[in-house]
Image (tube, rainbow, N blue to C red; front, side, top):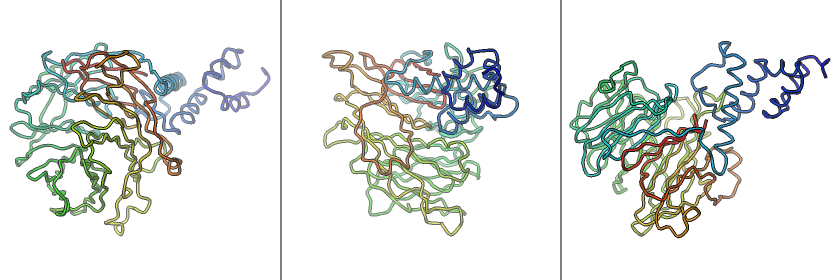
Length: 467
């Protein structure tokens, strides 16, 4: 074997699994040298992870250029391999667990949000006391242990808020108190009390904030009417109106991607084409009625795979818990995927043709038992991982009448193959944690970096890091 040229050995290595490459390295000096070549780990990273849509912690927003060494590529492969193996196991074990306490311990966590981009190292939290509209907004550096608060601001009389689901330098959150403020964070400011800065305020009054996507802010007014604001275009506003023959519904969330807005409501899913120049009133070009009223709903755009076309519309992963005829929801979660419409194109002749299919596709249902009046929450990551808090603790605490479980399942799969599959009915594929108390109230997931954050009703924040 010592007489084999390196290019032959490199061809052999392409057929080896990652643990086998490391064993191959131990064989002799020549193999040791070959397995430290830059192109070996560059090929493994691309072929086994990036081309398969598998997240690589720490690689986001970095270019695979000459500045990366063989050791860098091997380190990325090692972290991606460890995360993928743990993330897809039945009982994932975190590499580390971080804990933080929101300001004023008597405040409970209302919302958590991993900031997109920026190295994936920041977690936003909003805390408050139930029944009192005062809120504490904070941003945490979760690369450190324990997490460090880098920005903090008190807001009295908060009516509504929305974290930005896209990377934005000028808007990380919209929050409405006596006025509607658009905030960003000065990460170079060493004083947390002044790190949040207001970049703009809305020119008119609104009843509430629905969502914030990039520079697109969605607010609602009387009769649950939705308004789309372009924060980069003199705060121009357009109404997203629903047909007059439908009763008003309070939207859960709205998202905007290029020329389309998708509105998720308890009874329907509406898609609007945002024309250019924008009309003052827009009606949906297509609508989908849910089979039952949705009790809760989470969604996320699927992160594009390597070499995906920039003008492609990404699938939207949707996780729904439907309600029932009683004051409590059903004990199932439903996974849907809203897929891009192949008939839609970029040309002006396709105005009026939805960029997404007429209706989302039901992929599978998952058991998620809930006790009467118990706390629950769901979240979906950009890589398709769904996580949720439910009451299924009988497997861990025999005869217990309380307790919570943090469970999840990867939603990311080859959608083309699933078109011909029957709908699956499955249990959670992973249980991340469980407790005998019932203090968990909010969950957020960053499956790009392999992190799950839990917010508690006493202001504690728990972060599981699996990378």
